[in-house]
Image 1 (cartoon, one colour):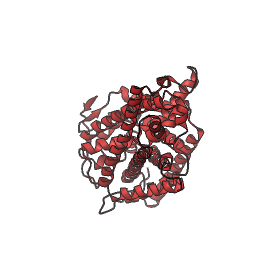
Image 2 (cartoon, helix red, strand yellow):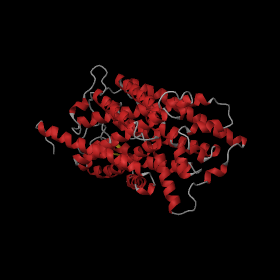
Image 3 (cartoon, one colour):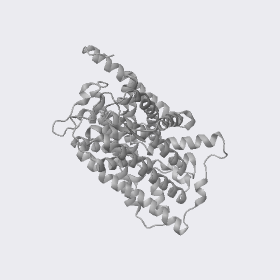
Length: 454
């Protein structure tokens, strides 16, 4: 991994109307908090249902795929330290506004489906550990509204809240690891489960089973790509992002594999599959006197963190797209005193509320992963295309093999080989169709206003 020193004109940041409030330590915690959360706390059981007791394998493969694509994002955010992420990179690489809009819309929808999955997880088994008297959909809607209010207060408040929630959710996962270690030391676990596959044999069924589990499990790794949308609110983003993203993916990947091992050791995969709070099953089976309600509370904080960051990132993406004239300029409106993108926050929060009722945790999580895997394939190609256009400042440069492998693995996991339910493709197709409709409306509005729509 090298540092590239190019020669064309491009400035590494410059002034931004957004407040630069995020330093290196905050960014590392932000990335970790962005990745941790709903995926590992809520979908571990569904991944186990697809692969069996060898729950650790999809997380190992997902970790490798995440590192490959993370390297591309690190190179691009260092080269272009601006909000808008994949949309910005797609436009600079291919200069096709329609493709740029679709990619941006897919990223935004992935964040909203992820936030919806988190809202569903919040109102599921973990919340029902305390009460089941309140309708789950109402809980999810109130949950989204509370996060929108926090986002409106400001990025500093949101990121500091993220730090607290990240520490809480890390604590929850460390509890799982301690319980798993205790089980190994006392002989409570069943090591034979670690090589148990849901699909028998070694042929096509086994391959699709593992790929399907990896695709769903990849939902637990998404989040590192969101952090690049905070480039205009980060101090010295060119130097800060490489370390933050790689440390974030490395820490979370290691934790995920260990949590998967502990879960399989202690609980049969069929039991995990039936629960929307699978790690609660691990706590109860661990033979350690840890209060289930306390762990459920920790899990609620964890899924809250995921939703908070996804709502935050989607609103910043709207802001960035509006500045690039991909969305109407109104999306770039900033609340004067708080300096937060008010229109973007209201818009994405409304969409998230609409998505809450479109599916269960597994379907929403798999939709998130599918949309982002398609985006990741494009980003990995874009990083290679953009090497023809150097910039003046030095920045991280990934070895060429990484984006090549990143594109291939992303396409494989997004393909029908991953054995996902048809509803995932249908939901994604409907979202993209909505995006195409918005693109057409935006072009008409710009044309009516005498703006260039080329």
